[in-house]
Image (cartoon, rainbow, N blue to C red):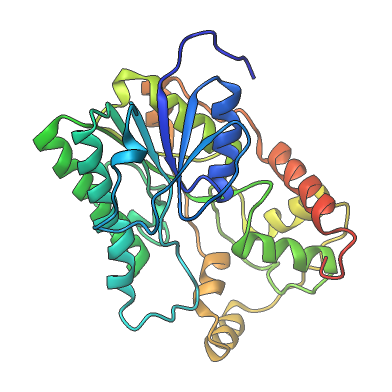
Length: 328
């Protein structure tokens, strides 16, 4: 990756210690940006200044963190969870994802920040696609508390922009994978590595994915390109794949044989409902395709890492982290 000799602006990054934030920090430093990480508690990050801002919410004091900052990349969020425990899930999501995001944007305008990049979610568009891929022109249709909070956060940011001139850029990625991945993708890798029989061979669907370094590259592209101001972009690797083929591709990257077998979809649906895992099954069985031609056309961005390469990098990371452990 080429390192620019241009004097770079100061970037405030939230969520710097997370899956995406870790990869973004690495590339920002490589491209000679001055990075400041807004964190909860004291952390030491290589080549990065940190600022303890405590919990993110409507009352967070951003003054010290934003001093001298020109760009904000907002990754921190109350993320989607499969088994919600909050009594009022939407209120819990709104506190950080909506009110916290709005407060950060308002503080950013007071501090003279030029551009605010918000990593949202394809769940703003909806949970599944039927005949065509999601685009930026589709009417948002979030279905759960997380998706609703991300959509409301986008609207709050654009409202701040209308009154202040702050340049807002919104990115909506689908499932992001790569070294450091967690959640359902990591769980799937463990099942495949262990040789767990998976009754998913009969599924016929198409899903878009996004390798973490491709997302990082898109974020950095949006930091510098003037046409990005005020825009929303959907992202993907551009290689939609079915769930059975994804399992086969992951297995090939991990050098194992996938244990796939056929099972009637009606039986799977009934079984997962009884087990309280219907939402997880729908994410495996349903289609969710993303059209990313707008960012390619307007900002000349395209994914640098192919699906095969991304899975190979992810498998290499998995083996280095888990191979000697009992839970591979």
